[in-house]
Length: 497
Image (cartoon, rainbow, N blue to C red; front, side):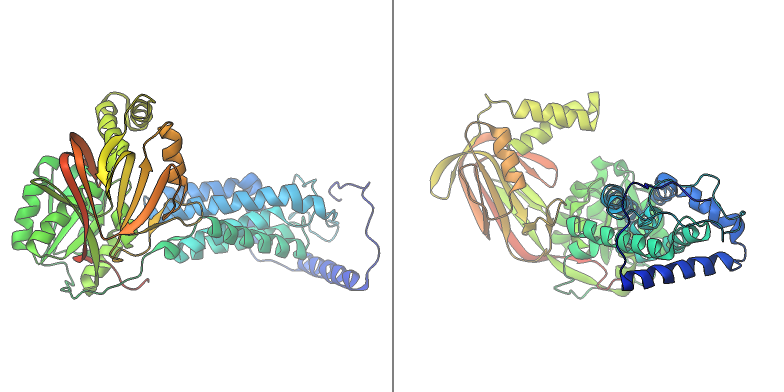
């Protein structure tokens, strides 16, 4: 029996090379049908059916995400994105372009054949494309996970020949197409290796093979228990101190007084507090990301306890820049960003609403309230003139946009502040959106960008809000932003294993 195909489409004319390739393809198919595949009768037909509509790959992605590993979650998302692109292109273009009928099933033993035969055209194999796309996408994000998924993907592709629904060339073409789809996704959304900053400048730090000499303070409000346990497994002699947010600064000060290496586990605000303490005490810092976004840790190239543990055991570290703001008697540092204008107001407004309606709804309400047309922008003396500003953003290092991913820093020791200004005027929401989509160093009537080492604002009204690494404070009079080049030493693995 054969599957249905469109008999109304005229067959192509004869071509000597094509005929030879088709005959070779047919002979390979018939040879595969006569071979004895030990143990395959129970496994391959079921595996082939499980891959219908991508069910097998969605289940695999869910299993990867359930591990809790950020790398596994990214691999799952990348695999599904690659699968989606491959499947959509195969079904809309591939199978409509080449109207090849399915193989005749006479040589295939009945026990191998699928109960429900596919009715689409044969070239290329959609199952093989999806399998290769998912496996390649996972492997691009994590070679180890890719090695686990690859045998399953290979078996799915082989099952299409084994069950007689595809010629070998259909499978090869589908697999090649799927792999290309995964690389196309990588061009749009770079993998971690493409966005990890260079491991420089190197710093000399103590190597602690078992973690003795490391005191790590963990913010319990960040839900860091699992990550702390993982670090204890990697560095069994490290001292772990878990504390509430209100005790964080005191515990960090105590830890810095008795440690060789100061460690911290929490979000960007927690890491900011630890960086201030480490700078004052002259201690190297080990960062275990434990928050929601973890901008500094990810831009640094540290993702989990495995990265931190390897760096501390080997004594591998780099020096990074620190941003500093001053206003009157106030002084603080920032590892990521510092801003004035609507963003600090949005943060403060979101905090007011989040306890009542939750985080995401609070963000929407805060944005709507802050961006009302009748709100007046900040006015300050900037570079020789008094200017109305909706937003002044200063990044600790240059932010780059890579593909469709949010802006990332590729160098944490470039000695520069990435300053973006959104000018005051009508339509703040549109102005802010235009500035967000634009790259650095742009200039327009709505926004501008410059790279500087130092910036000063004068005539800042009392009560003006300033946000730094997610924290908010009030400033007035004058504000200076400056760089402290290579001021902080941070552990990070210098080589990728």
